[in-house]
Image 1: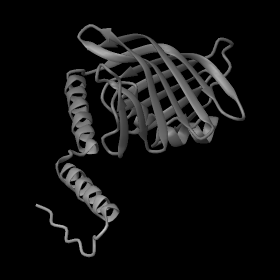
Image 2: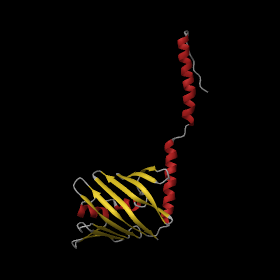
Image 3: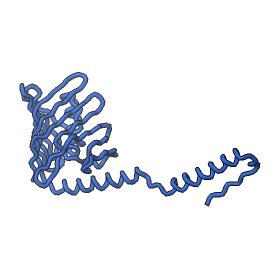
Image 4: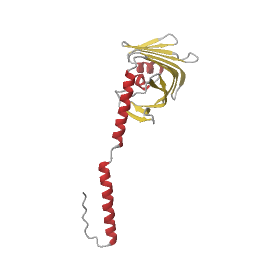
Length: 216
């Protein structure tokens, strides 16, 4: 209960002002106390979506994708075919094929590290794929995050901001300085996978269209 003491309200105008103040406080203060926070509701909803998606992906032992990829920066543009074969988190084979053969290369990952093979026969080794690509190709591709993002998941090691589509899938995600947008998903057997993904960071824009998923 709220009490207001008025003194010196001798005129009807002052009385009306005082009454208006009383009504305003009576309406606003209780509503402020009982109104639930939207951010808390959204956080719970996002957490439930991520946990459901993680449980679904946990049933996938290995996967392959075929698609088209384009990379655009202020300095260059590249487009071609992408093939990604994934076993365990550190066991993968990624191949980039350009129509002319220029820029074709392969990435092979294992527990020992990463090997980059170029079309001219050169090969390079490193512990980290992202660093290796930046050093040898000037491509800023966040493969550690991309391993999660292509499956419609955020990297659990990084803070994330999410927007969901009407179906409850992730539509928009901001993580580790990258902006990830999912334009649509497609059902492959019992699993729903992203079909078109746009990833942006500063002057780098990556566009991936997956034409086929294979899971086991």
